[in-house]
Amino acid sequence: MLILQRKEGESLLIGDEIEISILSVEAGRVRLAIEAPKSISILRAELKKAAEVNREAADEEVSPLALLGVLPEHGRGKEDPKP
Image (cartoon, rainbow, N blue to C red; front, side):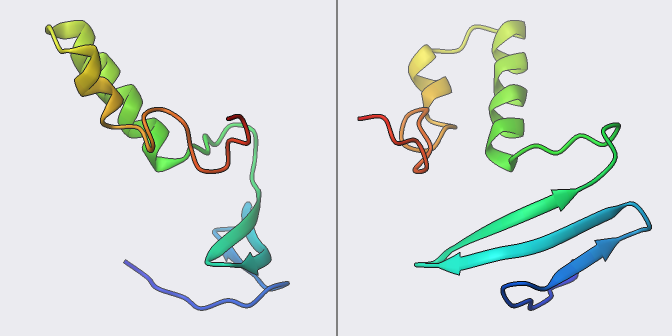
């Protein structure tokens, strides 16, 4: 694993086609801009994990409450402004 430090307004490159820019850092949150070809999938890690659990649940019986446990705050991310 490579660990880098970047400041607001700085960016990093992955290969020749992917650029990740730091838009802002506020109150422990980082806003990123990712520029990549449309053929590259970009997905938040918790959504990928939820999809994997969903696939496993389709293959076997799993309680719906167990599925909720893989999502932050029972399926609602902190960025969700809804009450």
